[in-house]
Length: 222
Image 1 (cartoon, one colour):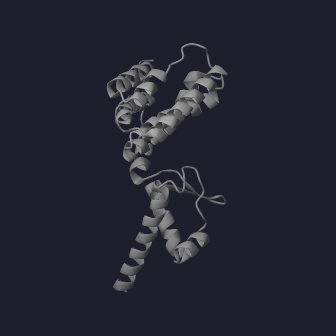
Image 2 (tube, rainbow, N blue to C red; image 1 turned 120 degrees about the horizontal axis):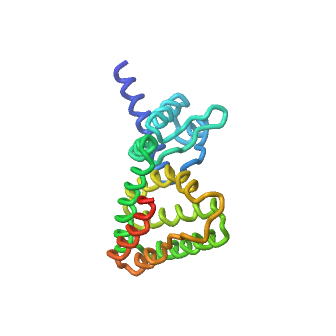
């Protein structure tokens, strides 16, 4: 019996590792529905009970959410970021904004050193989208474009953990940012990001960090 229990436990662990890898690699993105139990059982060559145990373990860890009648959805990229998300939810928005500032300043500094051509192209596109959505006064589109631009900076740092932590912070602050803007965007004040982004593109780490700190200070101090 002990040997059977050990083999079963090892098999469940292997399933958990493979499911976790799919999530961390982005094969299953945040908010996406994962394959059904029967589909996963066929893909991995194990029984449905083993799949069920693995899915429940990852749901308990905060990576998956089981929704009766709808399926199982990805809600976190790793145990670390899932724990961070829960901690952020229990913290004042002002505290989260201060942590966000620390992450973004370091992300900008690292991005200026590490960005590649693909990052540069993406940053320019997203900066243009942010400006365009502000000009037409579309709050929802502007919030999405703003967060996408900041996320691109975090990813241009090529520090996977930093990018994941920023994702959790950004998602937790989305409603706060939206509420602060109101239903219609005012022409002023518009917090310009172009200097910081161009500094990253130019590889000027000090200017990128300084400009990022400057515009985030406005948000934190408000």
